[in-house]
Length: 383
Image (cartoon, rainbow, N blue to C red; front, side, top):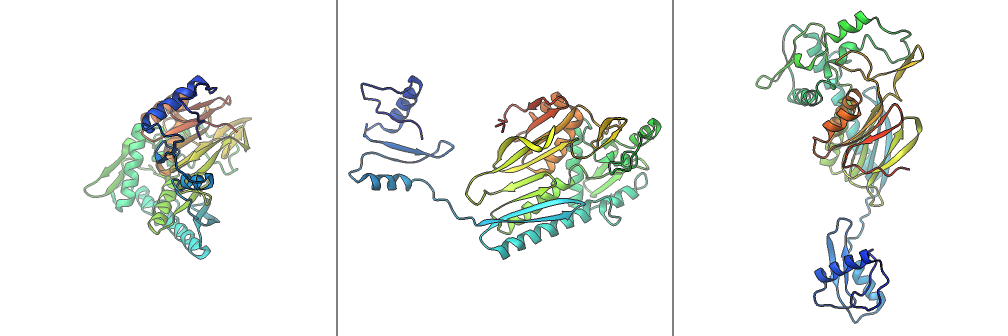
């Protein structure tokens, strides 16, 4: 609550700035100069109710004020399950009063994520993505509208980031390995040859026919940099359509939320300190949308005492350097996922410049010296 006083009173010990604020409120809401007079606001400044003097007891007066405030609804409790989907860890949480209903929601989410995997995974031979790759340099492939639209959105992010994000990076999969099997740097000629197959401008789409064509033989596309985010979006969308009032889909760090916590508070996300992944350096509210963090602290390879990130710069074929962590807040996990990857490639200055051109998108970047950079509209409450 704001500090209160009586503006007409001769002695006023409140700070001058607070007096001025109170006088403005007094003039705006209490033209009849009733004393006492109370205005109840919500957190966004919306007036919930006003009341002047009432000849009732203090207890009844407080009850009257409380009546202005919407009562918190009992949303139930959190039901949680950890699953391995799309080759990664998914943590699915649903808020509900009924455990059977909550578990049905979680089952629906898991089935939807598996459906997405069978559609977009380049590691599943029967997927539409694999069919596109098999026909690289040969012929266009007719695909579902869902996959076609995903490709189109991916190309839009590629254009926005000047190719820092590119789904055709998949030709590098056989060159750089981050599963512990890589013992030496790949030959420069190998990298150059594989990098020549990368290029989003060589992905041709035909909206009238719903076809996707990779111009170069040996080209491959893969949704490793935005596919989990897309799956989280679709699972969230499905659960909301079925009546799930609140929850979290956490796709290995790609966080997508809706609704509120059981106690009515907004969801909060801890931003991992990349210099010590067991600690967080900031805690931020996530009222809607998604947050995704990309970086080199989870997946990398050490060669000749040097760390090489799993995030490859599509323009060079070599691991990106300079940024250890990029966190993006966006309306969808798919977009946040793609932009976080692109920022690691672009660097802090260019990355923030692109982010600030987009509505409802913010970012936090930690460079390899430990310095924190952030877009202008984000406020960091460091722990």
